[in-house]
Structures are given as C-alpha cells and as structure tokens.
Length: 504
Ligand code: ATP
Image (cartoon, rainbow, N blue to C red; front, top):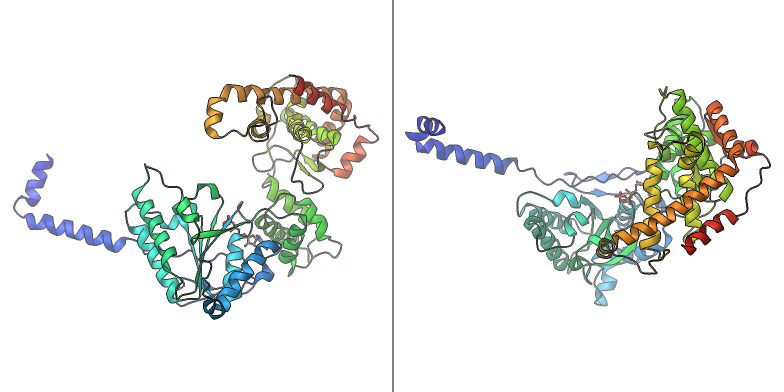
C-alpha cells in the first residue's frame, strides 16, 4: 500500500521528493530556537537596567542588599577589587580568579550574591541555567556555551552566572551522553581560553557539589568554592530587616523574635514570609503589618495553604486531635523544641500539624537528642495506638522521617552496634540486612518509650486532644496553661531507652 502511494506521488517525479526533503531540512534549521539567557529574576529594590537586546542586565544590586553571609562577601571583595582595578593586578602579573563556585541548599542567596558582584563592579550580568545548554542534538549545547562567552567577552567587564551547573558539569562516565560531554568540553575550553585580556568572571551554582566533574573543579577553573548555607539566627534577623525595610510594620514587632521563630529557613523563605505577611495585611484591610500577620505567613510557608471548609468526619477529627496531641505532649515532656503551635486545621496535604522549633541554632546533636527527636515524631502514632488501639495511615510522613534519621544514625553517625564506620552506598548494599536490624532496634526502642510515656500521661494527652477538638489550635502559652503544673518526667525514661538500646 505505502509503495503504491509512494509510486503514485513520487514515482514519476523524484525531484518532488528531493524538494520536500530540502524544505523539511530548511524548516528544521530555521525552527531551532535561538538561545535565550534566563533573565535575572532578582528581587531587586531598584530597576535592573536591561540592554537593548535583553541578553544581559546591569544590576543595581549591591552587597548592602545581601544580608548576612559576611565571610562569603569578604572573599568576594577581592574578586571585585580585581575587576575594578584590573591594571593594578596586571602589573603584578596576577591573573583574575576565573571561576567561583557557590554551593549549598536552594534559596540561600547564590543568585543574589552573583548579581551583587556584577552590581558592585558595574559589570554586564549574564544569567544562564545549566539545563538551558542540555539539548537533544549533538553540538547545540556547545554552540550555546560558545555564544554566551563570546557575548560576555564583548560586553566585558562581565559576570556570567550559570545556575544548576551540575546539569552540564556532572561527572562523565563511560556511558556518558555525547551531547552533554561536548557541552562540558566547550565550557572547559572557554574557561581555559579567556581572561587574558577580557575581564570576565564566571560564577557557577549548584546544590550538589559532589556531582561535578573533577575537570571542572581543578585549579584554574572553578577552583574557589564557597558554601552558602541556611542563615543562622543573626543572619535571619538581618535578612528579615532587608525584606521589611520598606514595609509599614507594627512598632511592637521584634524582628529578633521573628528570626527565632524561623529556624532552618532559607533567605528565600524569609523574603516569602515578609511578602506573605504584607499580602495578608492588605487582605484584612489593615494599614500596618502586625505580628499576627507574620505568624499566619510563617504557618502558610511551613505548613501550606489552609483548607477552608474541610470535610473531615468527626471520627477522623478525633484521631487527628490525639495524633497531634501525642506529638505536642512528647515534645513538651522531653523538652526537645519549643512547641509554637499545635493545630488540627488542615493545611496542604496535612490534616493537622505541630510547629516546633529549637530554641537556638544547633550544629551538633547527641544520640540522646536524636532519640528524643524520633520519640516526638512517633508521638502521633503511639497516641493513636494507645487511645484507639489501631494502626492507621496517618503516620506515613512521620515514619518516613523517622526512618531517614535512624538510617543516618546507623550509617553516618556511627550510633549503632555496627560500629563507627560511615557507610557508602556500596557498603549499604552489602550490609543491608544488618543496617535494617539496627535501624529497627532504634525505632522500636524509641517507640516503646514513647508509648510508655503517653500511657503515664494519658490524662494530659486527653486534655490536649479535647482542647483541640474544641478550639482546633493551641499556641505555646495556651498549651502550657492547659497542662498546668504537670511535672515533666525526668529524662530517666529516655535514658532507660538509651541504656536498653545500648544493651541490645
Ligand atoms: P537556588 O539554588 O534555588 O537557585 P539561590 O541560592 O540562587 O537559590 P536566590 O535566588 O539568590 O537563591 O534567593 C532567592 C531570594 O531569597 C532572593 O531573591 C532574595 O529575595 C532572598 N534572599 C536569599 N538570601 C538572601 C540574603 N542573604 N539576603 C537577602 N535576601 C536573600
């Protein structure tokens, strides 16, 4: 059949077939999308000046807009001096640092810092994402890398920022993809080839430094690595100040208190919270932003959108009340974190939640403290079993987190009978059954301690659950008032569980 069609159309006129093929080829070449650099999506108080073809910006952001990160800024000041006083360094025969690599969790200000480097040096700022160079057709990614560097050299002094550099710079393997390899090779060539005359600084950013190819990290390429982590309490305070500077705040708001309540959050979270609080204030037709608006914003960012008019069965509401009461009571008893709020108002996918944060930033935790954390996470499940004598699906997320922590205790922190070694993926494969046994030991011991603890304080558990059924949410002081003078058991319960753990 297809032969017949072919013959009837092209049999007499093969030129027609050739013309169609040529037309298709022309269409393909023309339709290949030109490379577009991602525009800087910087939350800028001042206008970015875009050049005529919009491939780069001249950011007006300076280091004053980047709060905290003092040690990183200090390192970058040298690079800035290099760009601003290139002659001084040239005379000495010094070469400008070529590649700087920012690594760390998302939302911590890597893009903002890179744009501040460009702002401080009045350089042209080129922003590209590693994934933009990843193409199906061999050679296209490499062509784009070449075009980017050519343009940057023309507009020098320039700062090229390549976000998600792991998309092109990941380790090469034997089964590597040809297109990716060519793109990475081109990037290496460009890094080696510039900066004799032009002032071009390349800043790469990644959340996964461990994935990057050695060739990219060697001296002369991306050899300056700067870790940009989540801010500590002082940095959080400064970031919140930056993002509330132009907002009408209730004078009674203490930014340092807000900083304490936002433990573990990134700069992006904090800027989001400041913005959400302003939006909530507008929604409520208020002329100033109050602490209440900030609290709502924090909950919104941590726990997700509040579900209006949820349709939850009364029986399920009771289960959720006991579940959340279990978490909150164990946290209170073990004094692990400050319980800011316990609620059974559904948010996002959660039917209830407990907001709890440590009183201060912690960098080292003992085995005892980690076991306490596990006990708080198991509090919900244990409360359900104690009151309803059932196993339910409600503890799925808690169990996932518990399992992850127990795995770290065994494989990374040397806190089990398997010894003090740190297990790499190959060892985990070999020792799988043993590791599982150790993890189970930790989790089961913590669970029985949690269950025992809740049985001893069943009255308090019921008080919290009933109050939640009634009022839906309790904050820290309401919880403390409700529990009255109840005496916290000395840490002996937990120590017992640890001793048992060690004995097993
Ligand atoms: P990703 O790794 O996801 O690309 P990132 O580390 O590049 O994230 P940015 O895009 O720089 O993060 O930060 C997002 C936003 O968070 C910024 O636009 C800014 O509003 C805010 N922010 C983050 N860190 C800071 C900081 N140190 N000072 C002021 N604002 C900050």
